Structure formats: structure tokens, C-alpha cells
Length: 239
Length: 131
Image (cartoon, rainbow over all chains, first blue to last red; front, side, top):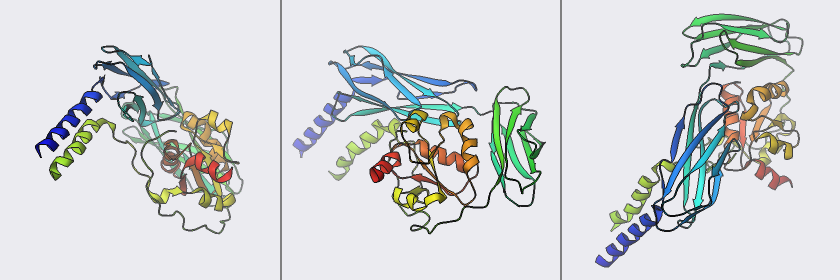
């Protein structure tokens, strides 16, 4: 019993000793980019606190929107450095979590996951950003709801339609909320219009689409149920 | 001894506390296989959620590009071909990719479309079945 306990304790100590070589200042960084920022950059700093050099075997970002670079391939004992993770925001909104997986030669199959969390501010939340009528439908008014993000003070919005086929009217609902009422002129004509939505004091443009669609697609014979019961997808991600 | 055996697991859980997966599981009803999606024929619209360069390199025949890098620009193009009754099959690169679930989520939430499915195995699975 004593021998087993001693062996277990020693193995735990040895494992921890190996892991402690490359010490990360933090493995998760939270960023708050400004509304017009194109990128969010995180610097994951490390130090080799062990007695032997550590080599990076791979540095792999979770999606095509994120790149990760290490300053060096080998980190001598006592040396410091960082992995720079650059997240290209594109048209993403809300909370974005991207990961960078770092593999070193510290221990077989040991990987460290660095997490970049970015809160992308959204000036206007538009729901839905698509309204449609089937051809020949009654030309009822449909409503698009617009809500200003909590960081933004929006008093008025301006809406323009790319064609005269749809009329739009803005109702101010208070507390940074608006309703855009959209009404087609004629639902017999298949047409679409881009609605441009802009807060009064901002250059940022948002879009919604209004459309008269053709008749529904003819359904084909289903292959099995609408969606089969399947096991959950495994974790881990690429793009 | 049994309690002792749990110690390493507890240690791992504490050590890897910052390394949890941030993804919630996709509900089974939102997943679709290549075979099932192909069975939908022209009723399905294939949506490629991968970055532009990967779409340009190759994609499912007839698929339309809709990624979050250029969401505002690409969404109207997608909506122009959508029609009521169509099923939307979104794919990204592989089983572990995340872009398809994000695009599917935004189509449901922002455009309020239904019948949006995620292709199990993504582009890799489609390639395996078709080439």
C-alpha cells in the first residue's frame, strides 16, 4: 500500500514538474474592440520556468478568421515571449470566442488552448433583417424591429429603400428601439429591395432585405425524417 | 484506494479549467448527413460558410458563399435565391469547424429562416462521398 501511494505521489509530482516548464501569464484574454475596429489582438505571454529548452511543435488557430504567431520556435530556460493572436472581426457581432492550440515538446500530446474572447459592439440590432411576401399574398405591412446596442445612444434612424416597390415608415418606440413598417406596393410582381438603415449620428450602414418571392419550391420525397437523431458533434473547432 | 484514483481526474479538471470547450452541442435535429442533404435535390440550398479563398478554391456545386467575414454583403445575395419551402444546408471545412453553426444561427435569428441545417462533417464529408 505504502509503495503504491509513494509511486502515485511521485508520478503526480513528475507530471506537474514537466507541465510547469512553459508558464503562461494567462490562457484567456478578453478584448473589447471599438465599434469600427477591424481586428482584435491578444498577446499571450509565457516564460520557460524549467531547466530545459521548450520547442513549439505547432500553433493552430481555431478558425480562418484568426491567425496566431509565435515569436520563436525555441524557448531557452528563463526566456520569455508571446504568442500573438489576431482575430479579424469581419462582419461578426456579439461575443466571439476563438482559440489557439499550442503544442510543445514539453510532454507527449500536451496541448495548451489559448482563448481569445472578444465582445464586438453592435450599434443596431435588426430583427428580422429579412421580410418577404409570397407572390399574390395580401400586401400587409411587416415590421422590422431595431434596437440600439447598450453602449450607443441612438435617438433617430433613417431608412431608405433601394426601389419604390416597398414603402417604409419608422416608428420610434423609445429607449433606443424603433419599428420599421414595410409595405409592398404590389405583391404580384416578383421584386426585392435593399433597405438601408442608419443611425442619425453614425456613418455605419446596416441592411435589411424586403422581397416578393415566387411560389414555394415543390417538395421532393423526403429521405428519412426531416432530421435524424444523431450524436452530438465532438468538441474542438476549425473553421 | 477508489477515492485516491479520482485524484488525478480532479487535478486535471482544476489544471484544465481554462481549457474547456466553448461550444455547446448542436441539437441533433439541426444536423444533416451528406446523403440526406443530397436526397433533397433542388429543394436544398447549399451554403458555404468557409472563408472566400476556400470557397474560390472549390465548393459543393451550386453552393453559395455566405461567411461572417462579409456577412452584410453576402446575405442579400443569399436571400435573393432563397424561396419559401427551401431547405438550407450550411457547411464549413470539417467535423470540428464552427463557422457553419454560426452562419446557421444567424440565418435563424437574424433572417428568421427555418429549415436551416448543418452538414455533418462539412466539406470534408462531402468530398469523401463525392470524389
